Image (cartoon, rainbow, N blue to C red):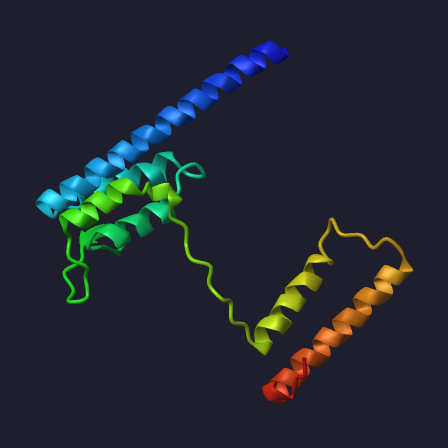
Length: 172
């Protein structure tokens, strides 16, 4: 294969992706409009099913679900989308429908959350890291690496023992 053939294929991939992106946006807009008009999640669910069965590692499923929840009273029960009938559900409106069309679902991303970790989490994380170094593909570079690994394991074992006795005793 030469560069010209590759470039021709790459151009087709780009065109296909752009076309697919527009089709997915159009389908999501129609699904949302159908829900707005009929209160029926079947179109939304059908699109989600396509994402899960045909679009793995390609379509942003989590972004789609966030988009639905932002602009429509839709929730998920047992893996299926249903109309949210709770008292706290948002009320579907023409403004929400217009807003949903103005923002493509793939632009949604989960908000960055603070990750709260405990002393136990620190010890478990360190134990997992050390365990990976004992894998069949891990080989120490020299005796200094072996000595440092042994020292780290002793330190983690001490942390784990101290934590088991009194978690508040571990100083960071």
